Length: 249
Image 1: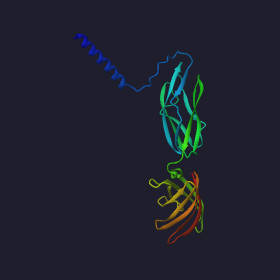
Image 2: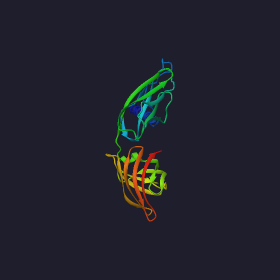
Image 3: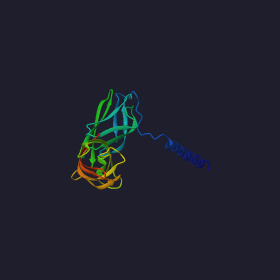
Image 4: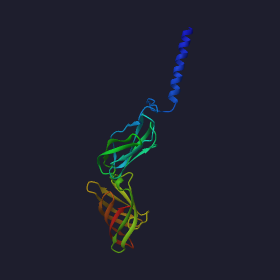
């Protein structure tokens, strides 16, 4: 009977130890590496190919693991990036291994395609270690997202003459391939007209619409950084035909 009690108490002790470990700090299961174990060395684990849209952000967990030697700072950087792509490491970088962090890749209107980018690790004695991953940039889910931002309109109108105003563009939350243009012709951000874009031809159409008792209509072309628009503005006291280039700030 006493042996069964001892066995029962031993099982409880094991369960308690497991529970304490489970509730403790979530650390990677890696072997202890003594500081006097030779020349410092490390490796970056968890790097993998990924994909994201032309505008967007993707995050992946990585582990910078110490393999040998006295710990020293490892700085991580992303290189060979296409225009508009940024790589950062959050929440930590430039630390002594072993440590966990996230690699964050952010796109701002990056051209579609697959890019081989370099992730470089640098330390004082281990030198440079280069790792490579493929990042595939996908088309926009809603191409109108690519036109959002702050712009400057410059152009000429038949009566008003030169135009030089600030313009803001936002994508429609509910209608795909539709943008809202704030401040066209006037620079007044409460004057908002909409336009439908065709990503296959990079053209846009401003259907006839009345805003603040003034009628707008027009058409044009666009790319990532500018729109070229011919439009008319008409009302009781106004009758204009304008040609404008709207350039991203």
